[in-house]
Image 1 (cartoon, rainbow, N blue to C red):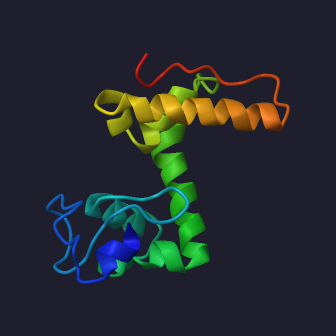
Image 2 (cartoon, one colour; image 1 turned 45 degrees about the horizontal axis):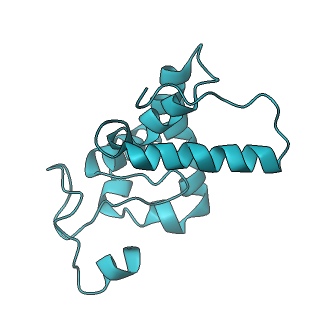
Length: 136
């Protein structure tokens, strides 16, 4: 996706929530796949970076320290509040990271849960999280 978007600026209109800067794209980057200009802006401000990530969104993918800081910030700010007291509800993590999957594209959320189960089995995890919290 990023290669196609970068070559010839084919994706400038994608992920435009009205909060971005001209000639910038705010598609998913980094470990957490941060998306949308509003999220880049808030992450940048909360991490004390001013508007650095809004001006240069590629930093989320190219600077490993920023990548990790953004991912931890997003988890703490957007996911943890949802799962508090319900840490065994896998679907809530999906809802916190990509809420669209819980409403319109829930086949992806169901697939994500099946992958989680396979990984958990491979790692011999006994107390697996329940599917609850996204589309059910």
